[in-house]
Structure formats: structure tokens, C-alpha cells
Length: 354
Image (cartoon, rainbow, N blue to C red; front, side, top):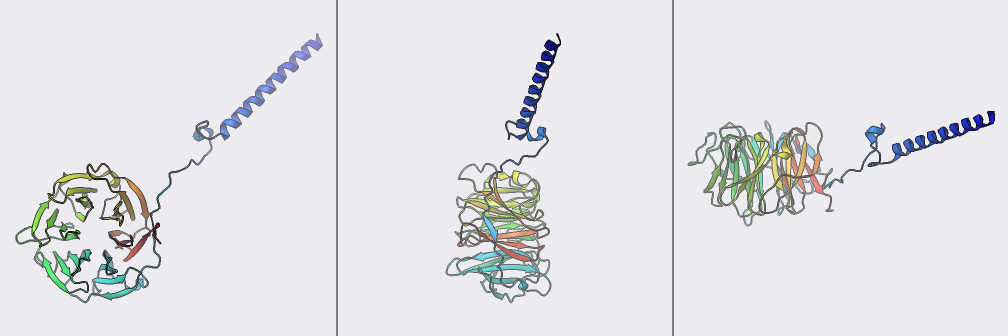
């Protein structure tokens, strides 16, 4: 009787011990196994899951420019002539040269000796032979402001669009009010976004002989309406892209007719596009976002429906850098960024090029 009872207790304890060991083993495996067999949050531990690889397309050229002390004002715009190997930097300030010239390698060339620029905003360089030129938008309120001006590469004034010192909205004669930026296409067409907080909110296309081809825009948030159109560029399939800063979107137009083709908004929920340019390989748009201190690269859509915007890379800048306008060297691929907060221009070079 005692022997039987003892055996019964021993068997029962042995079974309990085995069961306990099995439970502990199972729990140990359940905690240690990766998803989907174990849920890290439920297990009370953190398992770092693999992240999608970033493209990391560009890196900072820390050696550009060689002598940054030449930046003496607030840097608002930058333009590149890849044929002449010249980078133009537009800056503001009292008694400072309004345009500086550097080489693509960072050497200082010279400053413009001109008094015809008050407050430069946008700047664009054309390398068209035999007469390359530089276009500057002037948002000043003095006798030279509210104009778009064309200069020689060394700063000699060639012609002025708009009535100097007189803001307005007329088309004949053509008037501007704080024109933000200018872009000249490979065919010689001139696109002007007017204005940077003034009377006008419009996109103007001029033909090569500076006749008005079409005008789009008024203040508003609907299709073909703008609130502070701030930058403009053209892609390789005849679409014109406008950074509609106040409405936090890119709007797209047909270059021939001006027809509205659509808009991108989803990439700009937290910060507006301030500038837009095309990369040297025509694969991406380079977009500056001033308040978030970053440059984003967006995939260029194929011909047809523009779809929705896709961010493929981000260049995060330091706090309070305030990237304003950008330009791209179509020969080397380098991106130049005008930074009003840091009072400088910076150069970023493609990682796939030496």
C-alpha cells in the first residue's frame, strides 16, 4: 500500500516536472524566435527588422567653394553654366556685390560690378551659343525692382522686362510684382513665375523673341491657380512644373498650350516646395523645402498621366540652413543649393560619379 502510493506520487511529480520543462522550453523558443513566429511587442522585447535600402544618391562636396568668405550677404539664388564652367551666386545685403562667380571646382572668379540689381531673387544662366547670358529676377521696391533682367556673363545689362520700379499686372506693357524666378528652356522659351507675395500669382511663357505665348494663374488653390508660385522648370517631354509654394504642391502644365495636366501634393504635407529642377540624367526632380531644411528627390513620371509623387532620396541639411533655390550642372550632375539661413551656397555631387 505504501509502495503503491509512493510510486503514484513519484509518477505524478515526474509528469508535472516534464510538463513544466516543456512549458519553459516552449516559452523560451517563442520569445527568441523572430517574426512571424513571435511578436516582439507581445514578447516584451525589441527586434530590429530589416529596413528598405536608401538610394543615397548625393554627397556634400566639402571643398566647394575654396573660399567661402566671399559670401557676404544672404544667398538667395544659384545658377550654373556647364559649358563655361561657371556658377553664379545671387546674394542680398547693403553694400555687397549682388552676383558672385565661381568655377565648378570652387575657385572664385569675380563679382559683378553693377548697380542695376536691388534685391535678387531668382537667377538662371543660359549657355546658348553664340550669346550666353544670365537672367535675374529683382523683387526690390526701388527704381530697379519688379523686373526680370538679362545680363552678359560678366554682368553688363542687356535688357529689362517689366517697368523698373513700378509693380503691376498688365501684359501690354508687361509688368511684374516681385517676380520669383525665371527659367529658359533649351528651345529659348522663357518661363517666369510672378510673384513672390505681390499682386500677381501667375506663370508667364514668353517665346524666344519675348512675345507672350500664354499666361496661367490667379490667386487661389484650384487648378491653374497659385499662391506664391516660386520656381519653374521644364522636363524632357514638354511638361512645365511649378513650385506652388503657398499651396504646398507642384502643378504641371503642357509647354505648348499651357493646359493644366495635374498636381502633386502628397509629398508636401509638412512643407512646401520652394524650388524645382531636373537632375542631369532626367530621372529625378530636385526639390528644396525651406522650412524643413532638406532637399528631396522625386521620380520623374513617364510621358502621360503624372500619377503621384514618389520620394526616392532625401538630403537633410542642418537646422536653420533654409535652402531657397537650387540649380543643377547638366554636365557633371552636381546640385547647387542657395541657402538664405546659412548665408552660403553648397554643392552636392552624385555618388555614382567620381
